[in-house]
Image (cartoon, rainbow, N blue to C red; front, side):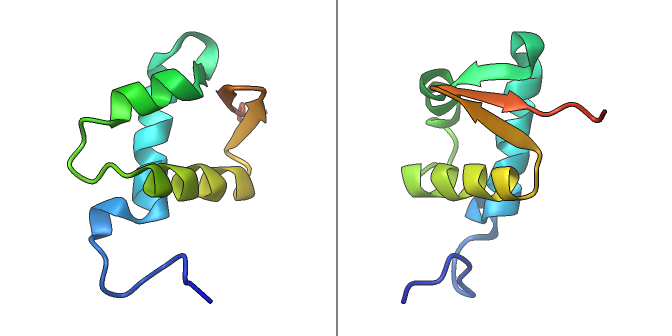
Length: 80
C-alpha cells in the first residue's frame, strides 16, 4: 500500500507545505474562491509542482477543515 508521507521525498512537496501554497493562491483570489484550473495554472511553475502533490495538498486542507469544494472551485472556509 503506498504511503501519502514518505521519508525520502522533498519537503517542499509534502501536503502541508503544498497546502500553504494553495492557501496563498486562494487568499489572493476574490472572496477566497479559486477555480481548479486557475490554481493549477498558478502553481505549475513552482519547482515542486506535480499534480499528485497538489491533489494531496487539497486533501490535507479539506480534511483539516480549511477549504471546501464547490464544483470546480476551491473555497477558503472563514474563521467563524
